[in-house]
Image (cartoon, rainbow, N blue to C red; front, side, top):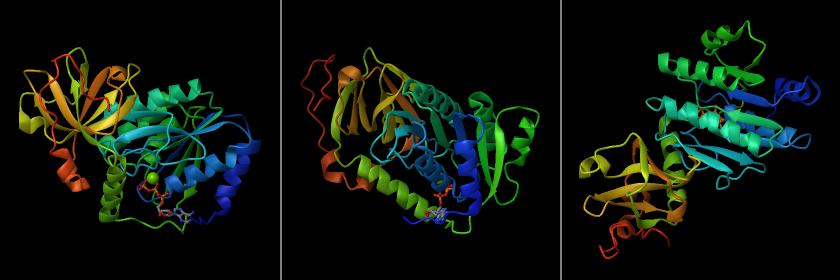
Length: 309
Ligand SMILES: Nc1ncnc2c1ncn2[C@@H]1O[C@H](COP(=O)(O)OP(=O)(O)OP(=O)(O)O)[C@@H](O)[C@H]1O
Ligand SMILES: [Mg+2]
């Protein structure tokens, strides 16, 4: 994609390359402000000077990984490549604020372990309500980035930025929304998400995982209630709390304590916990109707995972 680079982006790049030392930068702004384009461009521009990682912190219009997740990536960026993935549980942070915040913090920590010298964080579109403002405040307060780049049309972020006026960090860089930004409507957004899910689940089939001796967390439904579990999106997480794979629950067998889910391949022995979100996804909508109805027979012992493939 050809992007038009405004003069103020160039000036920011020069400041970041030649100004005071820094490590973490967040790009914030309302929806359709050009956040992702700027964040990606900055990461690409800075990578030659220092090891730069990218944190896609938008669970809706994800650049990296499937929607409902946050992803830490190395450059060059690729939608299917990440270092660590965290499940939020929904395509919008609203209602999943804790998971958003903890996911962000855990991935910032992970960036340090991956020896990032620079970390560029692309935030989701700022929600101009109480929850959105508080989430933005908490993200800034807990991560304390060296810089926040505020893309604004109408001073949308100022109520929160004002809280940091007396702080040394973050330094605030205010930029206007580039003229080249093309607003995407809700249908384009939802088509984009569907396509990303379809791509993610392209190699999926019905697998089962024993719930016995595994922790459940997130928005855990009453498992015995078929309607409550059907089509719930879950993450199968490793012992560090990172999502190894996402799955769509098809049913729960209470006698054998098996969760049946439609998922890409995974190693059951690596799965320590199952994280539920509130989001539901119908596998049939992803073009998987015939496959996902093929549920494995109840043949293995209750303690056996038949999920490996
Ligand atoms: N500088 C630019 N030059 C050309 N096109 C741009 C530029 N900035 C943004 N765009 C285009 O505008 C659209 C929206 O940009 P982008 O996805 O970066 O915005 P965003 O603020 O991240 O949106 P969202 O709120 O959905 O996360 C994209 O199609 C992108 O290609
Ligand atoms: Mg974006």
